Image (tube, rainbow, N blue to C red):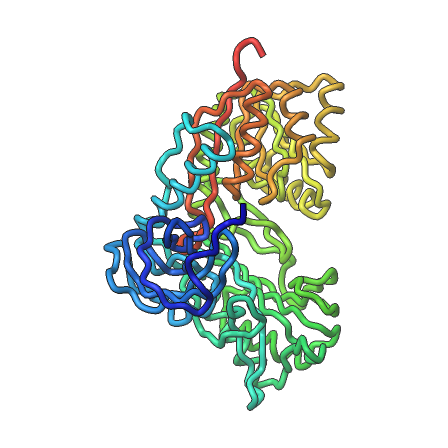
Length: 461
């Protein structure tokens, strides 16, 4: 029997009451049971909505006017919020953002992991959920009068929104970008044009150390030659004495990837430094280093608590990156083995271990799912395994290797609740019990949420 036709048509204007939120923060309302997803709608609100896309089982709408507002609605402070797309939740009170993220985790634990009995705690938020990002990488464009402009891309486009400030960036990042743009304009340095594949300056990246106040400026260029290079460096140094490093990265390809393979230090140091808790880290242009150090400490403190290290334990950190979690664990554990597939990250991890005088952490290049069975055959029996995989989660081979190594505890740090729930189900079926899940808001004003989960090996397994 043919399915009934959707009860709405494209370009139709309807009144809609929002009942829920998607994981991206869009409002969800239903017409005769047919769901419509509408950005910027909040549960409990009534609104005039224009239907912009109709599919068989659901549709999409555009918010025209709110007729009954939610008490959770706030005025977004960013001037370009509706155009930019970098943030999705500025129109929502921060308390509601935290509750939404907790609900998102609970929902996938139930639907995907069938683990509705597992406690999902309230999301750990920030006292001040603004100006938290320690890294900005922003495209450069050019106005008709030749002046350079910087700004993030408009949603679903490569049109740069001319902007001077981003309210989730460290203020120093904003000021540095503005200064570099102004100097480069005056020196006649051209912006890269992706249509013609001409011009010089593609992106400006700034990295700052939250505790050290160190600043690194990375100029991403299409060409090897950077016109007026010496003058540019001198003026940057004069404007900001905290600049420790000016670096050129060359990306000559027609690509959306920001950084190219070739990097040169134009002036200063190859690294800047920052602290998370008592651990010091070296940060290069390509280092994976968490962009919100305040929340990172809360995340890692939670991971350390779940690892329940009392001294004498052996720990494996699969997906160790530059050693951030490994070195936190090494403060208490007897031995930590870190595994990472990116050779440069492992080099940085070893340097960070030396920097912190930690000789009980070893780092290896390779796939954890290949190294761990070999270690097991050599007699290595970890007490704890920690994983912090990318958004796609863990490969099944890695989950099997973890189960086969039979650690007493597994700590799973995740940036994607859906793949977390999927992987927890596999670990549960392999003899582990998920004790609890703690969401942490690493990216306020956006729909992203990180989680830390503790799993205990069941007796008799």
